[in-house]
Image (cartoon, rainbow, N blue to C red; front, side, top):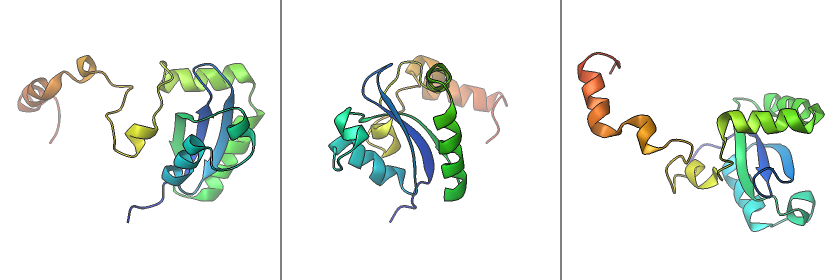
Length: 127
């Protein structure tokens, strides 16, 4: 059984669309619930099913505090927060649950296995 993933997160209807900010003690479960529209409310009504940003926490009280902080921000600050870590507004849920690679990292960014091993050999990366 995997450990619950405590986090503050942002779901969106589409890139630069309607956003929803929440916190949860289990982002894996909550993300699936949003995607499947299991509960009536804001996210189902506005079809906010794309996980576009999240921040992990060790304690739920910290996640709730961060959620309340972000909800007080104006929309442009929230967009900036998402753009800084996910400029293409990719849906991060498949990456989060291990069904896909992180869409924010392209193969050109990491250089591939051969370049990694070469950097390791040169001592640029500690093993």
